[in-house]
Image (cartoon, rainbow, N blue to C red; front, side):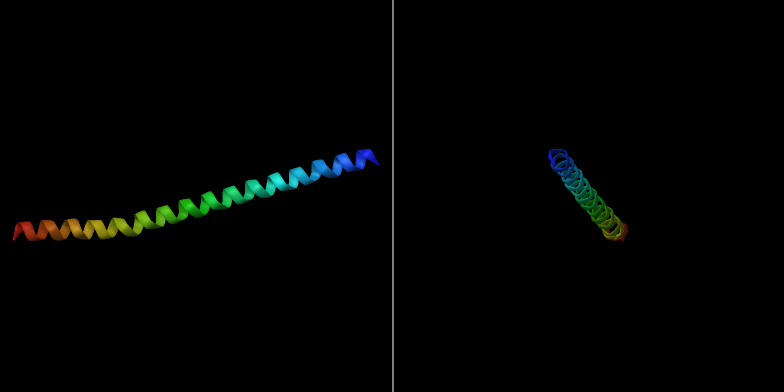
Length: 59
C-alpha cells in the first residue's frame, strides 16, 4: 500500500513536470514565431521608408 502511494506521487510529479515543460516550450515557440513574424513584416516597412527617404533626397 505504501509503495503504491509513493509510485503514484512520483508519476504525478512526472506528469506535472512534463506538462510544465510542454507549456514552456509552446510559449517559447509562440513567442519566437511572433517575433520573427514582426521582424519580417517590419523589415519591409522600414526598407520602404528608407527607399522613400533616399528617393526624396535624390530629387
